[in-house]
Image (cartoon, rainbow, N blue to C red; front, side, top):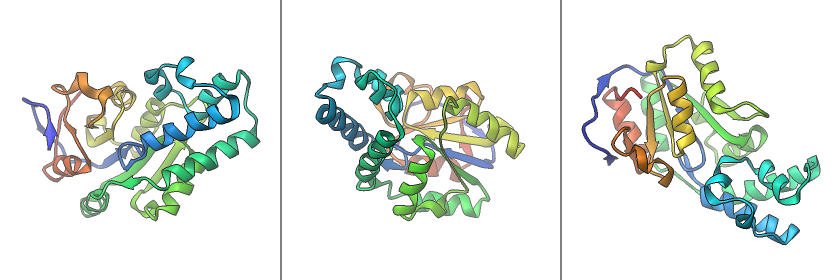
Length: 223
């Protein structure tokens, strides 16, 4: 089901699909957050929510959160340890059952699928390989230092030589929406509290099934 009313739909053939990972392809947001919270509590005896509010926590990557909690720059050994703990928790999360159907439709329609996530690149490649879904994506792009999604989206437009309207971006976070909007890329939301204020402005669905409907009928909405 797609939430929202009175969209002015425009039929535009898509060439590129950009998918977020956590909360979009896989239901891992809670497990990922819990792994970080528990690690900080056990190692530093700190309740991270006394330092960072829940909204701000979701805007930071795992290393930034840990640096704030420890009040120091974390070294590579600790980064590796944290990655192992988080990756283990994510690997036990549930994959959206409609991912294969979405992949199949994109394959038939010659739509390239980019997986773009704030998860560090080595970690995301390890996770999707473990889950045996790496072949669903033409490109897998993880978080790189000081490079945000907006910049990555801009690079995709340039490298693929497509117009923003020929791309559909899908994510569950308000930052995914803003990165898309900055590049004039149409956005389809996956239901999340951070997108509530946009419920009548953009298509929002509970799962990838709603995205399949948008692509199948070549429907999207400009933002």
